[in-house]
Amino acid sequence: MSSDPASAYPYKNAGEVHMHEILFPAVAASIQRHAPNTVLDLGCGNGYLTNKLKHSFPGISFAGLDPSETGIAEAKSAFPDAVFRQGSVYDEPPADWVGSFDMVISTEVVEHLYAPKAMPSFIRTVLKPSGIAVITTPYHGYLKNLALSVLDKWDSHHTVFWDHGHIKFWSRKTLTKLFEDESYTALHFKGIGRCPWLWMTMLMEFSKQ
Image 1 (cartoon, rainbow, N blue to C red):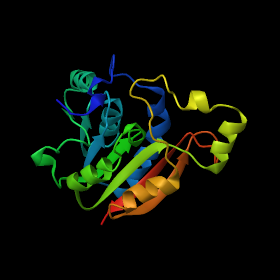
Image 2 (cartoon, one colour):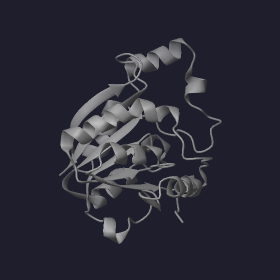
Image 3 (cartoon, rainbow, N blue to C red):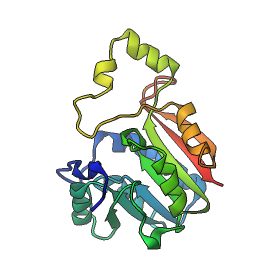
Image 4 (tube, rainbow, N blue to C red):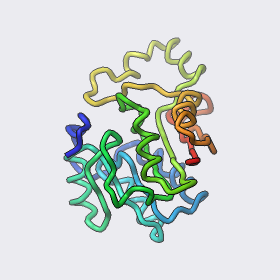
């Protein structure tokens, strides 16, 4: 069992959620760009995205890790031919995962972390030398923040009544600093959804140094 409080995050099934459709093309493009042999989906939830990527890239070995007990149970039940384990960035990685992945993807996870520095540290441990981290998180920048203020949308945007919801709000600058402080190099940025500078979310790639 994971020590992460998010172990209680509930999943009712292994079906698609709305963000999977939005994120899949950008994450798939990162995989095509770097052609990894092994990929860890860190914060895989119910395993839906992991499984979709696995079937889209049959030559690549995928594994998923998530703190949610119900998420991992749903993933293992729905996708028995994939590797899923319960755990989080706050836990020690399985010994056989240390230094074993060419790429780690983590979609819409870092905004849920109380101690976000644990993420680049954990990823560093499981990545091979010069491995790639692909991170997505809701986008925040000056124009989007201004629009939220003008339209009085901050209360709904902050999702304060969502158990295990968003507690950190990242910009391109702050996410870059989080990883560069752990000796990663930023490689790529892509805004996703809506229109430029009002993006719904963002994807960044980092290389382990």
